[in-house]
Length: 265
Image: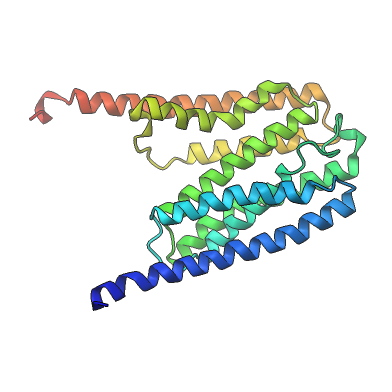
């Protein structure tokens, strides 16, 4: 093998091995935790299987993302492992769809309801750790940023579905979780929607508010009218944030098509 090729391929193999170990190890821990939760919470026997299926789907997308590039490091990194833990946490929450927790109303299963609130909060709080950890270790990457964003989006959709399952809001609450995916689908028809957006504190803050609001809606002591109002207000806030980004992309494409006279070729 030529020396130049040898310098290129080993990091790729090292990354695949490191990522593979992380994915497999997390799956093993998830299966044990899901089995324990099913036994302790009196959940269905299919709960661990649902959790593993949700995780497997996410893990397959993670592996595909790595093969497409965007992570120019030989190590998967501690930050991506934190995001992987959040993905596993999301899978545990997603597997509650169709289970007795959250109940309708949530006050019917207060112990399980509060346990869900605590666990979902831990998963949400971990979101503050991965980005900072990646920058501290010098392992930040486009892949890591996308992995983090898609995990947030999936978690938000799962929380929306659980709020509906708990009877705390109508099916319209799913719009909050589906908005990101609708935006991506629209970008396939309108390529200008796939244009780059500048970093935004507003976008990050709205994501935090949205997830927090949905977790609050699942509280066993939160009445339906209040939960519906919180979910509706957070949905309006999210829609406004998307509208701002869409308007920015419209202006960006307009500037490209009609640059000021002094900058035109």
